[in-house]
Length: 301
Ligand code: CP
Ligand code: NVA
Image: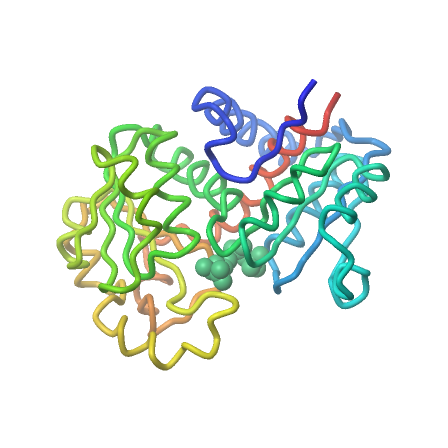
């Protein structure tokens, strides 16, 4: 049998993604009832982090602990990967010892190469191009607050980054409309955007993108690895803050999401992220539940 990986949302069918969402909501309820459920007893997840993380690391580690398994934190600082051992070799070796491998890295091609050489499922925990695990949590959060996201209208305001690319994939897989407002020069992946012209549109103006939206989403202006561009980006994105004016263009019951960490006063005003429409804490919590559903799907025999 071929090994299933989760490198982008397109690795799963829309039906599988819907099932994951239902399961995530179920697992969350089981956890709340205090039910012990250990489907991954004696299983190990290796977690390779080449970039910083709070939510991703803690949610995967807690998920494995709750499932009766074990998570192993690996950083390039103290593994041979950081000293130049080939990715292919690392993948071959690790995948003979553990049951799943989660990777947060820079180039998306790196995780593809890793997956190609792995005997066990590889999970993308963020690359420069995609952040599919975050999308699982975002969609779960939308469903919990407002029901099915199919046919709804989502506004992406800010950088056409990894999160934006994953929203384009989500629009296809969960069947919603996506309007993207980003300054010229900061567009999402052109081929990806062009692949779904019916659902996805580039609208430069944030207020226009947010008009009648059911969900407004943003992310940092400078992602990990772009720290030296911070100043230049702050200027380019000056008119792209999600503030009360942008939110007032959306539907009155629109939700606000941000994958976090956030910079109040930059991509989002404090009033919005700490306001009544913001669901960012539920969104962050759901990283745990959505990834438990993902781990169960990929790792449980
Ligand atoms: N949203 C997210 O992936 O957060 P971390 O960088 O803290 O993992
Ligand atoms: N776009 C951000 C997301 C962080 C979770 C980054 O890549 O740094």
